[in-house]
Image 1 (cartoon, helix red, strand yellow):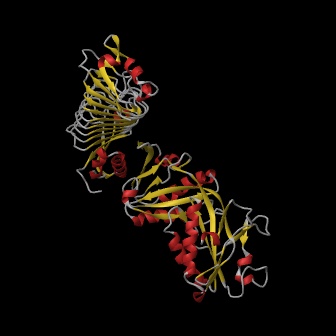
Image 2 (spheres, chains in turn orange, cyan):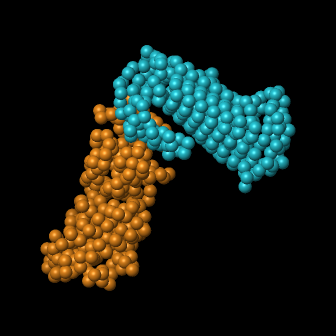
Image 3 (cartoon, chains in turn green, orange):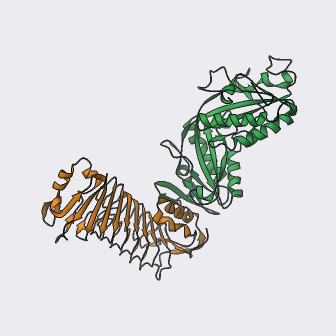
Length: 298
Length: 276
């Protein structure tokens, strides 16, 4: 199968179950909402070492936010509710509460919840005020910029992590140009994020390592510099491999994100250095979600 | 399905306890059995059919027509559905209700929303004293829910309330929000004396500057309160009749108190209709 001359490998991406929440950050204007959102998604590229994977989902109009101010929705993924419970309050506390004029709300309504204001309220040192409006509990924490308003909890839902595809290119520059366009297209799909910096993984990993203390290590089969040294998956033309990893709230969102992302990358074609599209999997042993490239592109 | 309608045949001489007429109590009853339900009328018990003409079959939607102030305990302990009353009602409207919606197209007596812990009461008229308040001896008044009064309210509104929201679109009497433990009271018209006296926590939001404010409230100055923006946005999302809250802005003069009770509550006096 080829799209615009780019070979689509007969393989699949293997994804695994995660837990996710959506938080809504509002502020005086979008600039300051972005400051908080960028802070919370910092060092949240992979659960391997960051604990969570987080990224901006989309901008929200004032009419879409609980307090009528401009906002940003951020999706946060983790391997368990326990991990979310650990990371969400600390990140909201250190990244959102510290950003001037912000407020933070739940963007998901569900039975399962993790705490936000429930933990952060203690920062108010006894001066915090609880307000229940529309059956939602908010905490008003007096802070130096005025009041930080944070919802008591945020909803948690089942989610999927690790949807991915690999862009095999002649050079890193050409590969990155294709990936940038792919990420731009993926960002238009609601319910998905590409948590790595710029949405692109420059150092895709495999599970395990020769070192016992390491859970993930470089994916040598896709490292261009090791082509002659290991059993490489790359042919002579390929000089760079970039990966786009997609986390999503459901299977269909990831399907759609992979579809638009791959098509965008393929639009560059071999003439612009894009040779083939592959995907990362672990032989079907890691996760129950398999995204077959050729099937989803039909 | 048509709404289950109770039309009062004539104005009762004595108070009539209509608390059995709720969606919860009527759920599994036939129309004949509903007509045979006994209501406390003064010192006696009388059947529904002796006082009301009953028709309809949707037990989740109850309408009481030609109501008057002799009808007390409308919607007592209800947990679901809706009751609409055309006319006035007496005391104890929505007492201890937990969910559902009561709409009064008229005035209501005292103790409306007493002990309520959820749901919504709309009163498209005036209301008496002690709305959302607790009975003498009760620790708390209303514990949750929303009371929306289009007209004026009497004295001691929300006395000892624990949680919930009371909106008074007209004027409120004296001792509004007295001794409240928490919760929110919004008065868009004028308010009487001793507002918030003895309050521990909670917010009393006044659209008009009161002529009198207790010396035991300390001025915190004019502030842009993001909480007000959130509150007004959330209220305007509840229903169309509250959409007018969108015109209210977040700037208010904050008074903290009641310091006589070491309180951490607040009286917020809105500074005109400000841009959001």
